[in-house]
Amino acid sequence: MTKQIEEAAKAIKNASHAIAFTGAGISAESGIPPFRGKGGIWNTYDPIVLDLDYFFSHYTKSWKAIKSIFYDFLEDKHPNAAHIILAEWEKQSILKGIITQNIDNLHQDAGSLNVIEFHGNAQRLICADCAHIFEVRDWVFTELAPYCPNCGGRLKPDFVFFGEAIPEQAYRKAYEASTTCDLMIIIGASGEVSPANKMPQIAKNNHSAILEINPDSTLYTNQITTISIKGSASEVLSEINRLLNIEANK
Image (tube, rainbow, N blue to C red):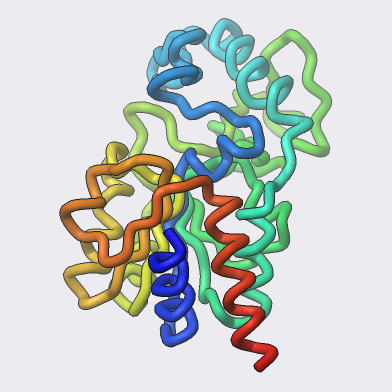
């Protein structure tokens, strides 16, 4: 793996417009399970609770599950070394930004500023009637489903449900970032979630190099990846960061 680490550090150092593309794998290292696969959330909860039509027709029942999944369980989760390194690279202008499929806000908690939230953010609530947005930290949850204090409308977590379109602004920004980068760093994304999984291919089509960091091979590995490193995001990014710091101090 040493050779790939050195190649990755060189690619990042030489890139003029590097961006990261992150998925559930990076947050799994903070103790947040993915939705799908072994140990996934959908092994415990029925995915229908995040179906948009079901949510509004079974509001209280859906909110009971949503509260358990996103607000009781996630409230004590914190950024890991991978999140922190990406934030530091942004401060150093090594990284121009992040496209993330995650809704956990851990990139922002780590200090990243230019984060394109492809699927929204669980730390916001939006009123289905008046569209007012509330920060979750300002909200006191009970066992009852929440209603807007302004108009009485039903409140929905501000992330994409099944049956709901990707926010136009998020898609546009992600597309623009993918067409303008010269290096995309895929971290913890398997390529199984559409349409987010199209962004690395768009980057590749626009002559970007693709650095992939994942524990196992993915749908990207043999198709578009330029440099593939198998391992945990925290460990691999820490090694790359160490080499970049050595180079910077020469």
